[in-house]
Image (cartoon, rainbow, N blue to C red):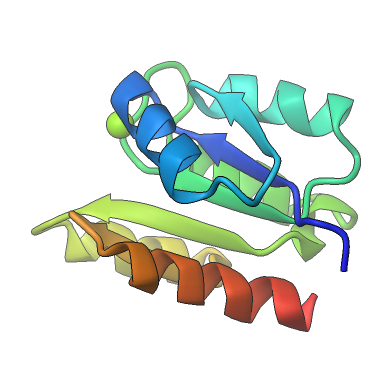
Amino acid sequence: MKPRKILVVDDSKLLHRMFEMMLRQYPLVHAYDGQDGLERLAENRDIDLILLDVNMPRMNGLEFLAVVKADAQLAKIPVIVVTTEGAEKDAEKALAAGAAAYVKKPFRNEDLLSAIEKLTAAA
Ligand SMILES: [Mg+2]
């Protein structure tokens, strides 16, 4: 199976580095806010999964999710929302808006990997 290409949308450079280390087997595309994420999606038509932060400048995760889910083509890409602890409301809103799953920071490697495996296997 060809390695699944993942778009990471997060304003934290540290988190991008962490994902690079945790997800070595996946080609990653990096975006630093929702607007940037939409531009990367337009350039990369072969994204298989999106890892999405909620709190970001310019366009936040929920706004990004609304645009993605309103586009018939992009809506098919599974989205995993990465929320901070205590932000259960964000997770609920994201799921209601069409996110496939969420992981709560700080998350364990195996939880993130199993969520990714599950969603890309079904894709
Ligand atoms: Mg953030």
